[in-house]
Length: 176
Image (cartoon, rainbow, N blue to C red; front, side, top):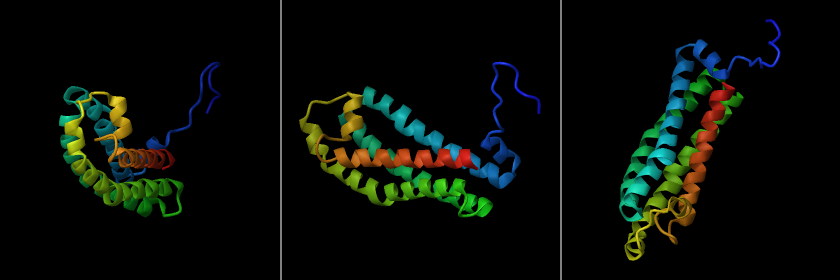
């Protein structure tokens, strides 16, 4: 290949392009990984702030708790499939597969460990939400979750593991 023109940057072929040319298993892996990232970004960072600002904490939290259960029931098997596809295609010691392992582990820890406790705390905090003036402060919700006492640490932990899962999937896609 010829050297790049003055002032331009010659980027190597992206990993995603290599995955697409690698065949249907790689393409399925890419599509599922991208789908989970898209749904996660939509769910946590677009839809949730919008609904919270419209509904306020008192109405938003019960709805979000139900949607959260659906979200994790949906993405958990998909992240497992991504891991299995990557392991089959690249092997367990490949960096991309290790990123998929991290994403899958974060998802499983959230789904079966943290989220059930967070939802239980959210149910218990309903009385606290009812006693407080309704809040539409998004920064407050991001920090505290459903209430200022019972759900604060669990809410932050759920978000941390969602970020770890998303970073793992993004790393998986970039390293493939």
